[in-house]
Image (cartoon, rainbow, N blue to C red; front, side, top):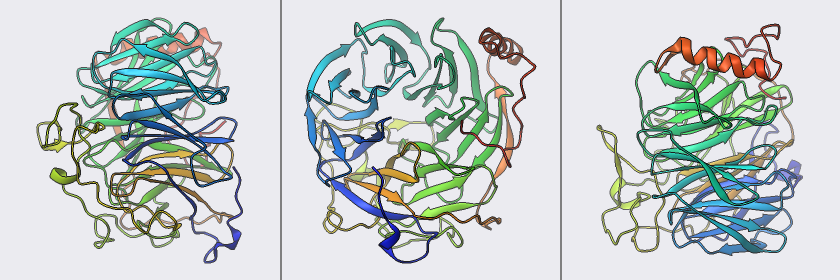
Length: 452
């Protein structure tokens, strides 16, 4: 899915939207590139999963079968099969080549919000609003382990890519991020920022499985060193995240690793994880922006698409409820699920966005990075409903502290006894032949690659 964007004009440092994909009638909740790089899958509150090709702007196939909105989609490593997670409490396996539904996985008792395959492709993990993490045998489509993982709904699951993909990360609205052993079901780490437990909305392993990138509803993204259980980067100031479960992705460009995330004001932000203070912010409703003068997300773009909680929430409930359901975190109402068609929402309009390669006009709910190339895919909320493909032809090294960027270091606190968790993780590393003789993880990422 390579693309020539050199003819887009403007600065070579800009990130450009070179393709807009339109096919969903509701919010786009998940976008994922296949591992072979040939296809893109998207999930939506319109109850469908779409498959896209780089050749045409319309979906090559639309999978229909879920009774309610689809929250997440994930590719099997062979890039032939997909799994989707839905508000109808089920997961579905899809065969992309035959364009059929293969299996329906039942067992969760509430909305299934997230799913992920392990690296070998023999296990599937799913997280639900029933507060459990389930492991499924892909061959038999049977649940082989149910773990009461958190005290609130799960918002993400992620497998480590190192070795046999044994570790699983989970995030939850209880404010915790946890690491699990898929073989034993034991919790190896509980990551809790020292400044409190704002609902954790997303977490994923770094490409080398040594770090975890975690989003939360305090508007911060934290990069955790798993071994030391410390936050070594806190990213904030340019993206807005107070109401929705926004996803993030690692984006590797040469020797630089970026954290890409959406924003509730319609922007897309890329934070340099190697150099503090360097950030790129793609403007909402425009074709791109350079990194030099991104400005403060809290003060910029006053004319961008706005939304109120009462009018545009993504709701949780499957009932006929004119007042969208929310999750109450004790401070304010937080929207975190997907809707079904029984709930009426002010969906707005994406007129003018369908055929124009401009930025999103509503919150950017999801983002994924193309494997091995400088390309991103993003999905928009209800007023937008489009998928944008972003890229740039060149990269120029440019450092410097932005006044509005807050890149800080703070410590995480272990839950349930730090010493015990440390021993567990050390045992697992030694069991894979990774003893203390290996180079230890550093506390500062300057000059250190997170990628393979």
